[in-house]
Length: 218
Ligand code: DX5
Ligand code: ZN
Image 1 (cartoon, rainbow, N blue to C red):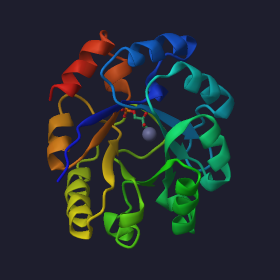
Image 2: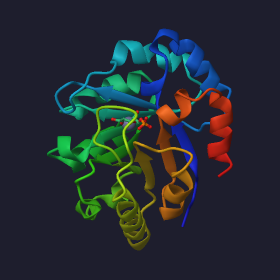
Image 3: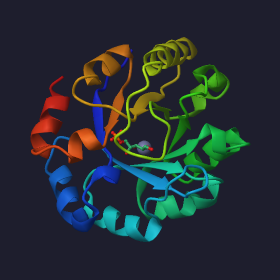
Image 4: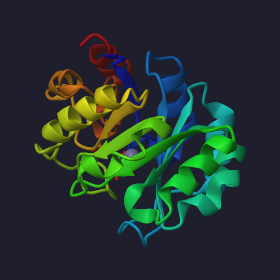
């Protein structure tokens, strides 16, 4: 069993008026990845930022980009994700009718493929694809907004997914997104998560670097 304890601060909670400044803080920190939330106002009831902005984020970021697409028909944007330098392309299970085809196409392009599950979607639905994905992103809030409360049922989803991954001999990482903070992070890692996304807990802190250090020392 691997326990990587990686941290991916979410750019959604950064100061959009000073993006370059906030990205520089993350570059100089012990954060592992930069989490990028793309929303289309259709799959989720909010719109964030799109590829023209992310081109600049890619130029500025020294951390690998973990792109989370909360959009319908995400596989239309494989080339765009590749172009903005995405290391991981996360598509929602609920947005992909032909998930196997989507995952194969993402990997074919040279990116790693992540599959994201909404809070109500059971992890058991991944049984027949788990050996072919690089990461499963479990939403611990309903996607669309930062600063929401962690849904407690996620702990059971992490353990069930951990067992499935181990039983199937999959190498997939488990990432958890939404409502993660310094009070619940240790419990989430202990349940079997490899990567935590943290938006408000990181960017709304007085001392961003210190909070990241505290996450990394858990
Ligand atoms: C929610 C996004 C999250 C969000 C997390 O739709 O997918 O990545 O930025 O923000 P916090 O950590 O504040 O809940
Ligand atoms: Zn996200």
